[in-house]
Image (tube, rainbow, N blue to C red; front, side, top):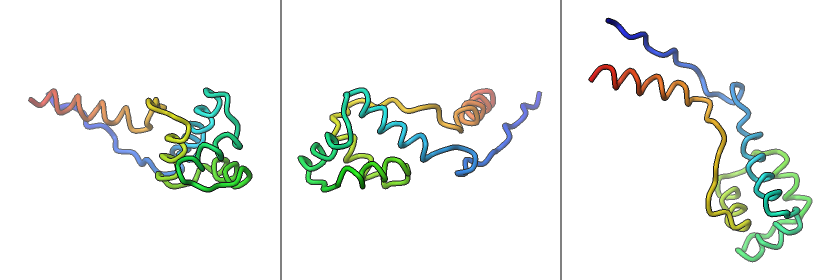
Length: 104
């Protein structure tokens, strides 16, 4: 019996709102802690990162920033555990793993 291979699909920017996901994570962590942008500015300064509240608001609003900046914000917020949303390739990964398991 031949197993049908999963269809490969692109995980390009147009297929998934990566910026929306990232800014959503930061906004959710701010909300969880009842913090506003000026609070994050103060916390970032404590870890050596200088940002103004308007600049921070713009960066997060765009959602297009470096992994280093994301990490700095998460550390400044005191995030120790992070739950991220569903990855758009999850179904493809599961299908590929099932094919591998069936071929053993």
